[in-house]
Length: 142
Length: 142
Image (cartoon, rainbow over all chains, first blue to last red; front, side, top):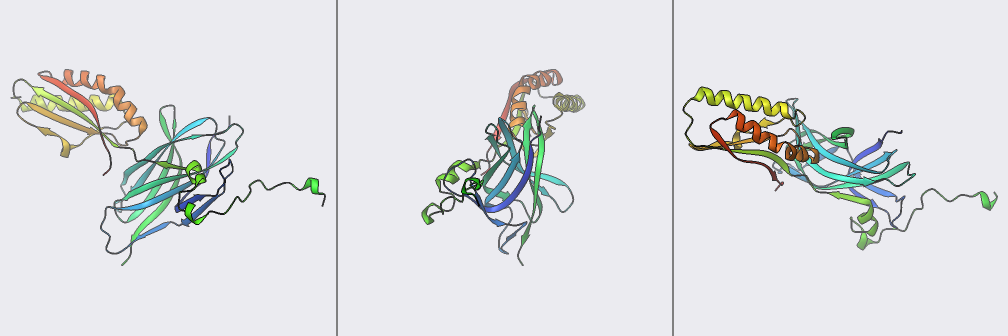
């Protein structure tokens, strides 16, 4: 049995599915980057108003449940889970070897400057399995 | 080139996005972009009522330590820890608050499942106390 693989897990500020609706929509990913810069006058905790995560799944079958969580790597080195961004269910069509999905999260909380990861996990037999990490850093402009 | 051998592209480009349908409001976006709501934080609240104020601090400390150790052993995946800021105590009542390491859909299910066992553990550990409530409190992000 083939194992589910996440080929891409990409953070961007905006994603658009190109119409018309279909099984193989193209996606436009806008604002792909690994640094989020907040203005100097922003006080933390702050939010990223919209964060889009583009995923390309390979070998998906049936209905699968996923969770995405935001992890903050504190400057002290301690890992702190900041937020569970949400629970998603994806239905894979029969014979669909690859599947593109874009997840949209609103008002993603940012506790402070530093390194972050958006972690995609899959529910399986009552456990969570980490499928992919997307790392980015948060900076504050001087 | 023989026209019969010309295969269509795997993906058609589709129609351009009209300005009024851009920014996440197109039909294709609605179908192909999955929006997720953050999952609420979870807390396990245990309320104990004491008929007679506890007079022996040593026994109370021992009961608390025993209870916490057994609670950890009950479900190690939850990794419950005491949340001291949310705990409170009066002469005749105590509120113990525990928080799991993560707060996802699986953790919510597990917490609901262990509630009856937590009640039994608390009754056994705190002999002179009545376990008034064992509840999972969900707190949505503001």
